[in-house]
Amino acid sequence: MNIEQNILFPPESPPFQGFELRANALTQKFNNRLVWRNLSLSVKNGEVLGITGQNGSGKTTLLRALAGLLQCASGSVECFVQGGTLPIPQEEIVRHIGFVAPYLTLYEEFTPLELLQFLTEMRGERFSTSLMKSRSEALLQHFHLWERRDDEIRTFSSGMKQRCKFICALQHNPPLLVFDEPMTNLDEQGISAVEEYILLHKSRNGAALLATNDARDLALCSAQIRVMDFAIPPSAR
Image (cartoon, rainbow, N blue to C red; front, side, top):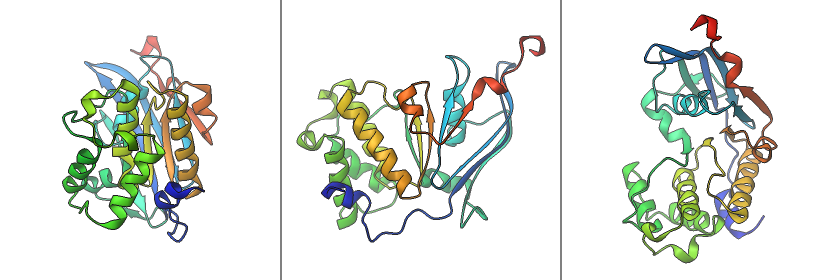
């Protein structure tokens, strides 16, 4: 493990403990059109769950619902700690999740370091702490943006902006990674950085959800769920 990985996951720090996300009987519809129904799943420590399905099947919708960014027509999404026994209040779930998607936007007038400081303060934390600064710098190095840390994000390519989204989502070291089409816009260097982080995260007993149809992404997954298995048959619509 190299220097920046030691900072991202210090050897003396304990692995993630007792985290679990559970989705129970989720049903979603848009303008009275049912997308999927009675969809249940769970992901916990050390698991990487792949969510697959053809375009328009509702992968992104499901991922947003699991991350607490979208309300389903029915069903529930809950997160637990302490071995799956203690529920996390809904307003606190966001602190346990790192969400990345190509459609997310950045404050492009900021530099990466300025944006990381802003997000830290938004969470009520202090960017000036040694651990937070060291982790931010290690993430910039891991995703190959250290040399551009003082450049405005608006000058970045689409791939560099995607890497910046990962850095922002991972800065607070969340136990659950929620990635929608994570390799979009990335070159081989960026893809390798994401893959390496997911494997390191899993080795530290973290969990991840990946919405993807890419075989290389799915090779990282310990299990898969097909959204289409919960789709509504045409005759039932």
